[in-house]
Structures are given as structure tokens and as C-alpha cells.
Length: 250
Image (cartoon, rainbow, N blue to C red; front, side, top):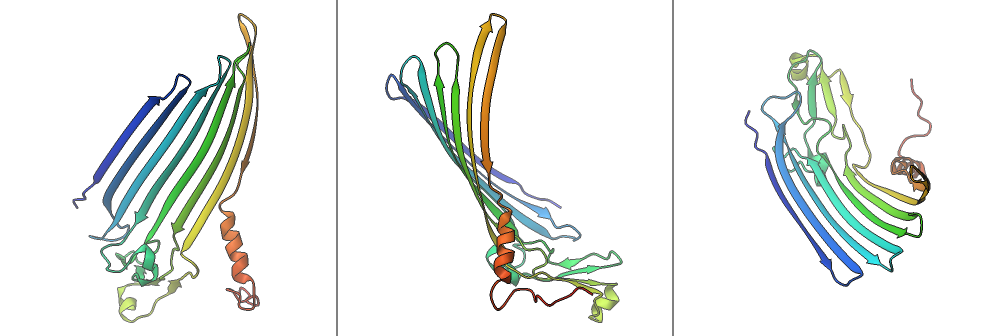
């Protein structure tokens, strides 16, 4: 099987000394790829994998005096990746439930239909602000802080269209499956994460052959996966819970 891979990339950067005490810089990069890949357990069927990455970074360095220097950085990046079954018309991330059902066999006969984890995709948006302050007076103290935000909308719900498993092809013709795997729920998840970090450190040169470095760092990180817990609680609240609270496993 011949599979085509396309890759387009662009990068640019500029640095300007706007005053004797101020220097600014900016960088931008972009890449776009597209490649098909064969579907597992199938013959002659492929999935399209488009991806696009975009990044921008801004940098400002200001010198207050011979002892104090400050650097501010801002960056934003977006990475998008999709697994699409374009060979099935109308089967897209926006209409995930229009995709075909999957068919598999216990005797390892070649499966057909839709693979149970497609289509899916995600976009990762990263925003970061960082400040580095350096004060030189005898030692070399350094103070830093960083704020980081990530937003990652995802489309992913395996088995949303179901996968029928048959003992063999004859049972398939008789419409007699031995198992049905099926999930229900929202296929879209908007994961968000916030991270904050601060750092302060200093170097003390005690003697020519001895330098002591001491630092203290504080970090806070949120948990994006908590979104799944919050959705579960919300779905069970109210007079019409998603799952019957009286249901029992047998």
C-alpha cells in the first residue's frame, strides 16, 4: 500500500534593540502535516491523520541599571491532531454518531465497519507567561515566576456506535452476535489545567573554590482529569440521572 506524507513548515524570528536598555524579540512557527495510515484489523482501509502546530513567542528584556535586569516572556502554542475516517462520507468529529458500526469475529476473521475508537481528535492550547528578575550585588540572586494555562478540547468516545462480535461469518449472516460493546455519553471534553510556579535562588561565593547555591521553589498544578468526575456528578444529579441508581450488577 502506498501512503502519502505531506509536511509544510514555516519559521521566522526577529530581535530589535529598541533602546539602550530594552530589547524585544518575537518568533513564530507553523507546521502542517497530513498522512493516511492503515486501520488495524482491516485490509485496504485507511484513516486520515491531519495535524497542525502553531507557536508564537514574545520576549522583552529591560535593564534598569548595572545591578538589576528583568526579562518577560509570553508564549502561545496550539497543536491539533485528528484521526478521521474520511472514507466514510459524513463520518467526522462533528458528527461522530453518523459513523458505521464495527463488526468483529471471534475466529479472527477480518473485521469491517468502523474501528471502535474513531473518529477522534484533540486541540492543545498552551499559554505561558514568565518573568525572570536578576539582581547582581555581590552574589547573583534570581527571582522567577510562571503562569501556565492549558486548554485541550477533545473528541473521543470509544464504542459510541457499538461493536458487534460474532462467532464467525455464518453467525453474522444469521444476525446472531455473541456480544455488543456500546457506550453512551458526551463525545466532547474541554479539559483545562492551570499551573503556577515561583522560584527564588542565589549564589554565594564563599571562597575561590567554593560556591553555595540555595533556592526555593513553589508550584501549584490543577488536575484536568477532574473534568470527568465533575461530568459524572452532574449527569447523576436531578430527577433524571444518566444511570439508574437502583441498577445492580448481576
